[in-house]
Structure formats: C-alpha cells, structure tokens
Image (cartoon, rainbow, N blue to C red):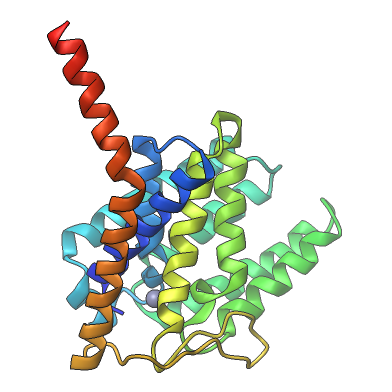
Length: 248
Ligand SMILES: [Zn+2]
C-alpha cells in the first residue's frame, strides 16, 4: 500500500477509534498517529515504493522525530541502563543506515553486545539480544512488520507517556496496528511472527496496480465516513458552543 493511503487511513482510523475509547484526542495524539501510520515502512526507505510514496521532506521529518525519540530514550527511558543506550542505538541505526545489509549487520552487532555486556545486569538481557538478532535476520519485510515491533513501539510509548494519560500510546499503537492490517490486505501480506513462516495475507490488492488503487480509494472512503461519524457531531457541538459563547 502507498504511503499516502497509509497516512490517511492510519491516522483517520486510529484517531476515530481513540475517540471511541473516550481518551482525549490531543495534538500530540494526532502527531503520533500520523508518525505511527508510516513508521513500519521506515524499514526500507530506499525501496522505490516508499520513496515514491513518501516525499523526501516527510522522510526527513520522520527521521528527525526518531532522533528525538532516541534522545528521549537515552535520558528519560523507563528502563535502566544499559537498555536506554541500546534502545537509542537501535532507533538511530534503524533510521539512518541506508543499506539494508549494513543495517542488519549493525543490529546483529548490537544484539551480540547486549548478550555479552547485558548478562551482569539481568538474565533476560540475553533473551533480548537473541531476539534482536533473530528479528534483524528475518527476511522480507523484516522486523517492522511484526507483532513484536507493534508491541515494542506501543510499550515504548506507554513507558514514556502513560503518566500523562492514555492518548499518546493508544494513538501510536493503533496507528501502527492499522498499517500492519492494511499491508495484510496485499498479495505479499506480512509475516507477523517470525521465525514462524505463517503469513497474514488477504490478497485483495497489488500495490501500484489499478485494482490496488481502487482498494486504497475504498479504504480512504471508509476512513472518511468513520471519521465523519465519530467527529461530525463533536464538531457541530463545538461550533454551536462557540457560537453561543460568541453571541452571549
Ligand atoms: Zn508497510
């Protein structure tokens, strides 16, 4: 699926669902929903598909946002050292190494470092290191299109922001999940639980083909209808209140 469709459907659907849970739809929630709806495809920024779909500037913005998250992890992470540094390193590597092979190599090295250096801190560090290596060697769409990545991203946001309410981590988790669901509609599908070979694939569309564009358009219309249904009444209420305040 193209980046634009991901952005519209991911942001629109996750904000609608967020509103339905009763959590406030804040500016931060809108931002994180938009970032999260595109984040899984940062996995392959040099693929034709993504560069064609994502304007260069948007990619830069995503990378800068990731850098900020890396810095936040380093200083305010919910977990103890050395995990702060490891998470920050993963974030930076994922964003900035252009070659996929190079990126995978870096992830494997970080995983090895975690196994060797992390052992004295806690025994489960070794497990984390092994998982990181398994993920980075997983072929195809790789680590970002898995349940693990969805869980890690949501937990990360939860750890960083849950003291300020549920809006941010819910919006981020929903945005990411909607992206994965949209990709599972394609012929390629996703492999959500590597190293299991099981694929989540509905095969409704091929990205870039005419039929694919039609499915994307249908998805966008469903999003608009859902969004209007959830926010239409709120907007009217808000307008009416503003009008009354203004005239009284
Ligand atoms: Zn994707």
